[in-house]
Image (cartoon, rainbow, N blue to C red; front, top):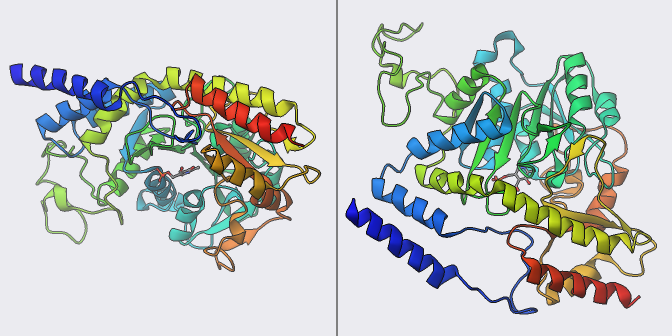
Length: 434
Ligand SMILES: Cc1ncc(COP(=O)(O)O)c(C=O)c1O
């Protein structure tokens, strides 16, 4: 154990030598659009976990799940290896055998946004369901509840929506709509950890909700994600699908948690067939490792301080862009939404004296990162053109504007005061030219 203390001291020392005191060189170093921020504690936790050499999901994963469930105010959280996996599990859960006569089947419709990240949409198609895409509202970049309601048919069974760039959709109205029509609601909260609606965390409004911990996100575990479950029953389905589809719920490295490992009886299987090898779902293996969870636990401690940096950076960019409202549609939120911004999104208006591509190239030259609002109007992307399971409701006018004229700047915790000032000055230089 003495060696462990020594190793941790060395790791801390190494952190400061390798990552401490990094001096920002404007125009040379990138102002990242997103990126990880970490201290010696993350490295220490990672090494400590490595020394235990548990590797698969274990004690750190359990703590991480409990801590996140507390923050989100949900009964259970299941860790996954990515946000995309979390979305896949959410939609697959709706198609699970355990859903009985509520199980979704081919031909059933799931409503989602036409604008966004592909892996919000993909699990609908991967499960053989029909994706019904609706337009968004410029500024919030989320669909209005009215757009969702108009898309509901007798085949509609669920709604999956992202809180775009950390900006909550109208969770109260959309939850009420889903309840009224007997639909499942899945929140893709991958980009929105820490955001709230009417004081209640996003991720706690849906039947299920997904989170991503890829380095671009509010906290990171490298690759990683989670499903927030509104009940223990949902968590059982998610865990089974995540863990090969097995019926057994033993944690990795444990046996006979149910106390009747050799006493189960399943139709078609020999009496007492080892519960560990009984498969009640068509599952995957989408688990997180303990090494990732060890990092995540430390990152969770930083969530509030990261959110404060994001708010500060967002506010500074907002003050700047507010002076140029003639040229830009600025980000806004619906009443009740408390965003935890992932980025600063703007849409260039038709009367602006420059094109998006010119501004993006200028910012690239200045080494200031930018991103588009993911795939824009996803129906224009090669993967979905003419896809037999994609149906569009109404004209996707705003989605096309996003495709052609929107982009976002970074507000992440890796952008300190010096980088922020450089970003603001560079943008101002460009805008004042006109
Ligand atoms: C809205 C949304 N959903 C899902 C994902 C997928 O998360 P991951 O990269 O962890 O698979 C992302 C990725 O950033 C995202 O923005």
